[in-house]
Length: 626
Image (cartoon, rainbow, N blue to C red):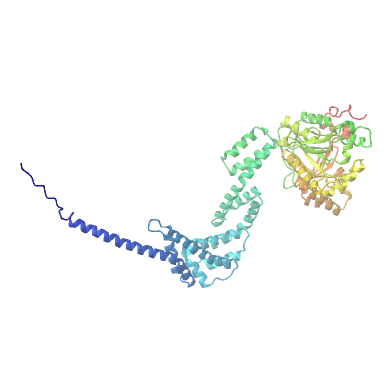
């Protein structure tokens, strides 16, 4: 048998890899070590620098080394805006940059304050403003341009602007941007009055006056350069401010049936905002509602007056002490309805009393559908005095559950009911709705009010309460007690009724506060009465320009009392007459109103009512006392 000896096992002691590779690895490790050291030193230095830069900047400013300060600012700005892994201190630089800008801003604010006070800047201030280069130039250029804007709108005087420019315009970092402006000071001065007026109109939300004012400046070929640029900016601001309010105003006119006024307003708006779809949509609505043709009308304008309607004929004509007044001064509900039918058949069309005159107090040129004749209806005495309850009238005007203005009065059981057709307002609203061609631009009538005793049927001012209670007691009714809050609530409620009336085509006028005889009162008494009306009624109606002289006792236009009334805003003055009469005087227009009531119906030939309607088809012989 043969035996093999086992192999010898051993570890071979030899080096792995080449010497070159080993040297490369060693070199790489050395490089990493050195690089890490460098990065560490950089980070350390960067940390120290980011923490020290603001302090260095502050020191440079304090020691008036502005070249160094602007250099530090620029370095800091570069670091604050840099990106990358190495910029681990970016937020610190951003914070430092913000602080630098705040420090600079404080100094610049001090300079601006001195300039506004017309103080002479120190050499150091001027050096700072110039040496801080772009940091100061951006703000100071804006400041100087703002001075020009402020001058044109009247916020500062010319010498403030001139003094500021004299000191700053030669600074190297400002000169290129502002050196041409002093040569335009004369243009700014020329534009200033119109600019002040236009800006004032814009602030008061008189948008069209503002826009027209700015456009006048813009279209002046002599006002170029800075004035032109600033005016363009003002126009854009005006357009932004005016668009939505004027569009909504037009939409409100449409909702109130004022299609012609809305169309006119929208067409004017369309010139400023061409191709605007919202405006185009509203114009399309108007086009369907306005008359196809309007022609100039130069004939007679008929104006009639109506007192509160008799809704309860049994109460009105019961033979008591008030029956004669009811029979003479009022129409019944049925008679008013019949009159409207006749007026419509005779081609009359309702117009607003305000269409008679222009804003410059001249006679207006009426434009009407062909064949139509203008008619103004004035409702007088809708204060519903306590005595009216004895003449079968309604007691109040209120909003019903649908938001429409309705008459309120008691039924036979004493329960208060609402009746849309219990007064001329609701009747005329409904008639015009059924006959749109009876109303030009949604016109209804003018409600002429006093302030004595109440407004409609409500106490709206504590001053009315004693007069109301006296009238109630004189007519056998109990006095009432109202708290200040209840009176304030009445004021709010009546305002809501008036707002609805105005929206649906009704205007307001004054019959004086106390239904006074102006002809026999001195100026001081008229002033007192007018002021009371403005304070107690005008705060509800808004401004009015139509004054109806009670009982037709008018004043001549040259009378000092009439002159004073014109100065209070009245343009149209109404008296009473048997025929249509109109006189255009100096800054005013006088008209005679033809009363339509029981008395004038019975004496229709004297009042020539046949020119308006067939009296036999209106006067109700069956219901009136024989």
